[in-house]
Image (cartoon, rainbow, N blue to C red; front, side):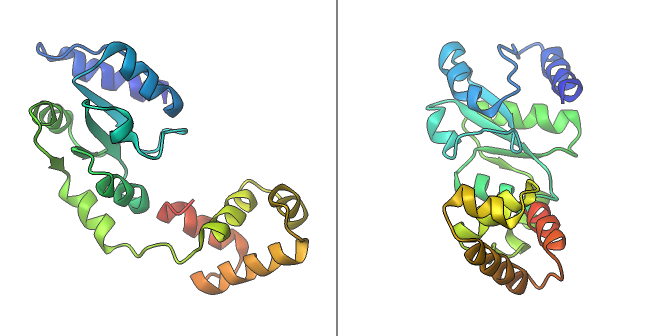
Length: 187
């Protein structure tokens, strides 16, 4: 992560009209840093842990370019619905990112068509918020007894949720459901 962030800083700093004013490695620090340094555009990884739910709104007037992975369409869909100005694939060439940052700085919306297509063609999560919560804790490796304790549910209720999740997704096992949900960005 540090290596990639450093490479990104190098690419952007190389441009004569860009000044990189902050590097953040935790999503919870993005809004505070933006408030202190007041950037014109923030470039943020869509999968950075701890990002606020309403990132564009939390950044105020700062343009936002989000780097996303085509393999995580739910995160991309969430960013599209949040009206993010810039959405660039992590597979994009450096000059594409630079172009997107420049265009977002002028108020233009720049959306990578590959990301948009992935987001639009991937089905929504069939899981309820409570099922996602049960599955998220299960994905951490917690057995049903622990999930039950953490969510103040009975162990039987947790097992019922897990059975419903397996049935809804068409998976054969809990492990397969976890992989499917992580790949789709449902967790």
